[in-house]
Structure formats: C-alpha cells, structure tokens
Image (cartoon, rainbow, N blue to C red; front, side, top):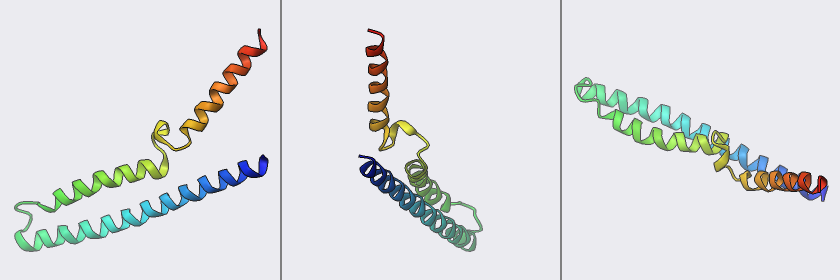
Length: 100
C-alpha cells in the first residue's frame, strides 16, 4: 500500500508541476502579447482609446483561473480535497469510536 500511495503522490505532484509550467508559459505569452498590443495601440492612436486593455482584462481573468488551478489558492476546489475530507472524517470517526 505504501508503494501505491507514493506512486499516487508522485503523479499528483507531476500533474501540479505541469500545471505550474503551463501557467508560467501562458503568463510569459500574456506579457509579450499585451505589450505588443499596447505598442500597436500607441502607434495607431497614441492611446486616445486604450483598446488593448480589453484584451489584457479578458486574458487576465483566464490567467487568474489558471493560477488558482496551478498553485491551489482555493484548496476546497483542488483535486485532493475529497481525499483530505475522507481522511478527516475517518480520523473523527476513529476518535469517537475510541471513547465509546
């Protein structure tokens, strides 16, 4: 069972590392592309109407969700939440059984 548990932890960690790598790649693309759009916006109309901010805002929202998934800012939404909750309930049940 220990081997299976270690293997499970390895695959969860590997998946998290892949999500973090994807986030950093997306973040770099975001910075470069928004900077390009900002420069294009300035070149076309000297930011009289900063339309590049619409793209920055929309893509930025998606990037925030990707960061939450990659770094697990909201633990209740994480994939391992169910496993943690099961372990917590099992411990509570074990404690209650001890005292009966």
